[in-house]
Length: 73
Image (cartoon, rainbow, N blue to C red; front, side, top):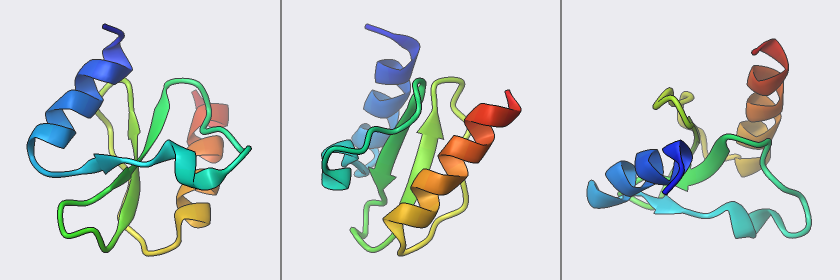
């Protein structure tokens, strides 16, 4: 199990849902997952080190934020 998979499992245990596939043919940057919060209202990105983004209803804003964060690493 990769570090990202472990982080995703922790978030899923609290009710969040991984939804990378909702982006269609676009993929999240390596080491990032697109998550939907337990209320199923807001998206956020989760990085393999456990860092999370702010929540927003716009999954594309989350995707762009993950790309920006990946570039800054």
